Length: 117
Image 1: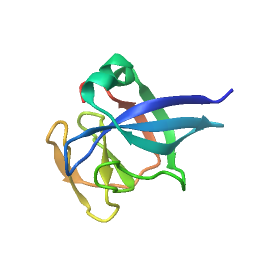
Image 2: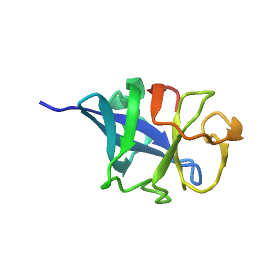
Image 3: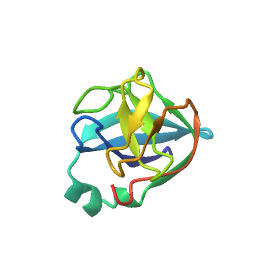
Image 4: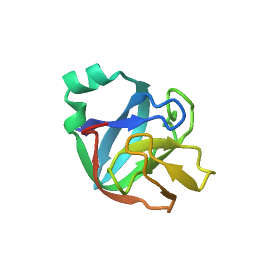
């Protein structure tokens, strides 16, 4: 049986919440689907309590943000939330907490959480 969950993301451009399906394959999490979602649904389905840690890969079929179509993601080092990323811009402003910084590449993350999106 596959282990899968939904992680909450926020669109950097439109500030809209979306879901990202994360499936555990061996010891890595694969992001393989993204879909629009409203905050009420995220709360009702308890996606805001999801926490994912470890290596995270974007599968080839990952469609990107459902709002702006950016197909990368950024993990905010301040609040721990995920947002979409165009894979080009190296400056970042978190749409959740407003923190700013430079983007650094990584494939392993601690405590990606949807809480308080």
